[in-house]
Length: 347
Image 1 (cartoon, rainbow, N blue to C red):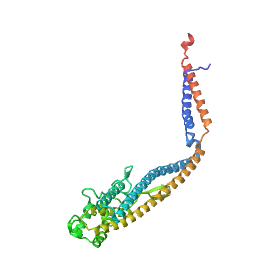
Image 2 (cartoon, one colour):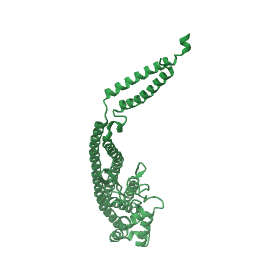
Image 3 (cartoon, rainbow, N blue to C red):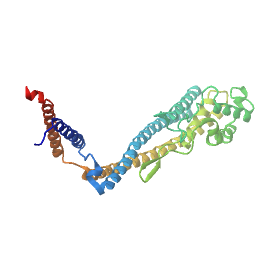
Image 4 (cartoon, rainbow, N blue to C red):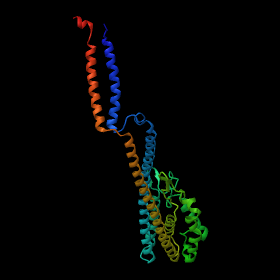
């Protein structure tokens, strides 16, 4: 006779339960993801192809995510450039009115002061902790406020005036400054402070170098702008001259020279800012086009991966249901077997 052990039967059922539970985990994963649980086991020699597709897909998604940040920075830059253009337009209107004699000197001076303060505020805009107009020096404010107490740019401007004429603009002797003398001062003393080395020394902390971003796997482009562009410098120069000299004792002829030179500078500034806006718009279009191309590639890779790793959802759901039922039945049988004992039989 062959003996039968209830313990052996119970252990056999237990091992079967463990195997079915492992299969249930895989089947549940396949049912929820729509892909095979073990790629290597399912694909064998074609696993390398699946891994390659997945790697390229991850790289594309990383660049697309990065482009989202780039697009946000470019959009904010465009907004700020539009604000600068509005400031310049308002300032130019005030200068035009002043040139016709309809504006008081104090009102023109106030407009210039407002313009240079707004310029500093706009240029010091930051997004996600990075200054938009700082070039690659994104953690430092790109522009110093010309009107702030202790401003090195204002100190340099005032010092150059005294060095040129021998007195301050508030001195009564300033009423004798001719138009030719003021024109010479603007050309030889003020211009180097804003369009020359003085800009970097006293006004700007930005770099000329721009941020270069990878917008596609094989494409990079500059995705920022700098406060060191000529249009911004010229707007700052005009506003600095008007805010510093229009309400002083200098002669009316000298003030007229300041207004006329400032009008030319602001007109050129508007053109320069418009050029930067156009360049930024071109970069925005490149980023958008690169994203569209990469999203098409992402769709292709996802389809290829799905072709390799996909499972039949109906079959996966059926396997989950069958395995669940078998496990429940196994638990019930195990419970019955554990109740078997010789004592129960004899009684």
